[in-house]
Amino acid sequence: MILSTMNDLPGYEVTEVLGETFGITVRSRHLGSQIGAAFKSIVGGELKGMTKMLQESRAEAQERLVTEAAKGADAILAMRIDANEVADGYQEICAYGTAVKVRKLPSAT
Image (cartoon, rainbow, N blue to C red; front, side, top):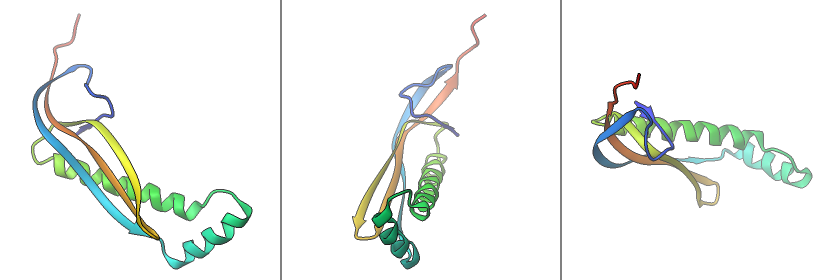
């Protein structure tokens, strides 16, 4: 699966647009990271537990995006990631883009 944040794909022609596709995950912080984040907010600095959770969530949402698009697409164009707090302590991560079929263009000589 080709995954691109661009609207087009150099060297390829889009032959069919299959439509929007997305992958989503919602995660909650565990009590330990919430307590750690509260203490860290007093002194400042990176919340490493939260950073790790968001990296894992982003990877999971992107994997779900690719799995969904693989049902017929060759590529996903204009891929984006959004993150929102759904409720206190719950983080939603959504990866989305346009599922397309592509054809590799002949190389120019």
